[in-house]
Length: 119
Image (cartoon, rainbow, N blue to C red):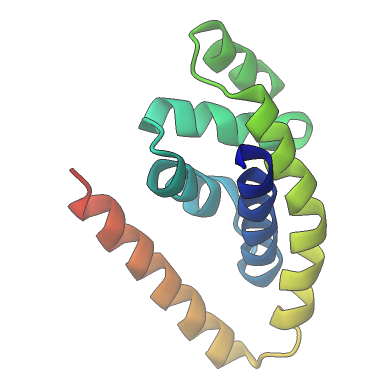
């Protein structure tokens, strides 16, 4: 189940990455906190595993050394990012600029409110 959910998180993050040009900090980390119940540290470390080569090999190693990275889940999310990025980019190119900007703003407000209210 974690593998399937990890791939779904990756696809969702990929869609948002392609749609809004975002991924790790604004999509993957909140999803890991909300759906996997991870601590902020573990969510950040796992997100870095998913973005390992292009973003932060050294940062990932530091999180991993401290037990704050789920490598298997991070790799599954990375697999989903591959397909989701294409889907998000395809959708974004179908939207006009004002609509895309408003959709992005609503998404950011939703994430900010959820993160602020989480106990």
